[in-house]
Image 1 (tube, one colour):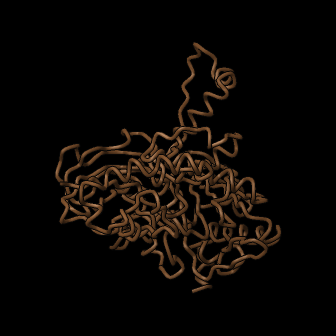
Image 2 (cartoon, helix red, strand yellow):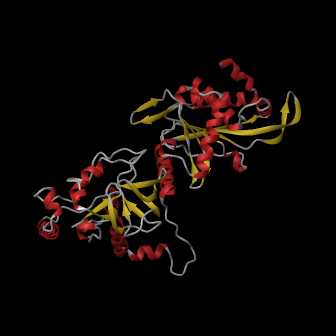
Image 3 (spheres, one colour):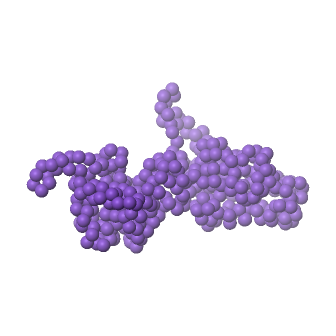
Length: 428
C-alpha cells in the first residue's frame, strides 16, 4: 500500500524563517515526479519555486495563497508507492538545497521517525499504529519536550511571556505553529487588541510580509546599531552631462548617468578605501572588492541589486551591467545572489524628482552616496551668474569606520569629478 510522505518547507538560508505562498503549481490528486516544483513562494530575497523530493500522488496542500508558512511547516503530503520510498527520506530531503541557497546547518528530522524494523516496517501496515499509539504516552510522560520546530515561534512566545506547554499545536504530531502562538496571544490579551484597533474604524491593517517585512527589520537594525551621519554639497553637473553626450555620439552601448556616477564612486573608494568596509563586532572589515549596490524600483518594491567586482569594469561595461540589473529588478527576475553581499551603495533618488535625502544605511555597509535630480538652476560660473545643471550630493556614513574628514574628503572628490569629469583621467 502507498506510504504518505510529508514535505515541509525547507530552510531557504540567508537567515530566513518563513516564506509566503505566491502560487500553487500542483493540485490535490495530481501525480508529480521527484524534484518537480510544487509551489512558488516569496521570501525576503526573491520569488522561488520549491521542488518536492517525493514522487507520487498529492494528497493534501497546506497554506493558502498569501499565507505565511514557517520553515519546517508542511507544504504537501504525497502518497508514494512502496517500492519508491527511500529508507530515510527526511535525511535525503535535508541534503537537497534549493538552487541559490545553502543547506541548513541543523535539521529537525526527529519529527518523523522510521519504525524500528527498518524500511520494510515503514511500508507494512503495522507502521500507522506505531505512529498513533507511541506519541501519546510520550507526550503525557514528558511534557517538557515541546513540539516546536521554529525558533521564531519560541521567540514570539518568549517575548509575550507565553507558556508553550499550555498551547495546543495544530500541526502534524501536535506541532506548535506560529499561528497557534499568535492565536494564544490574541486570546490572552483581547482587550489590548481591541484598544489598538477600535471597533468600527475604517483603517486598514496591512501585515508586513515578505520583502516589506525584511526591509523593515533591516532598516530598524541599521538605525539601531549604526551611528550614521550625513553630509551634503551642491555640484554643477553641466560638464558631466556634456561628457555623457560626447560618449554617446560614438557607436556602441549608451553610457548612462548612473554609470558615470558609479565610475566616480569607484575612483573615490580607491582613494578612501576605509569607506568600503563593514563593522564586525570589535573590528572593521575592509573589503578589497567593491560590490556596488544601487537602488532600483521593482515589482516587489524598492530593491538593491548588487554589481559584484565593480572596480574591475570600465565605464561602458558598468553601463551595460547596471542596465541589465535594473531591467531584472523591474521584471522581478533577480536571484538571491544578485540581491546580497553589497559593500557600498549608490542611491540615485533623483529619478523620483527630489533634490536631497538622508537615507538609512544598508546594513552592514558603512557608506552610501545619494544623488538628487539634475535640474537647471542659477549658479555662479567663472564669476558670472548663469543657468547650470545642478545636483545635490549627500553622503551617509558609519561614524565608527571613519571621521568627518574622511567622509568630507570623499564627498568633495565626488563633487569635483561631477563638476570637472576630466579629473578622472588622472587616475587612469
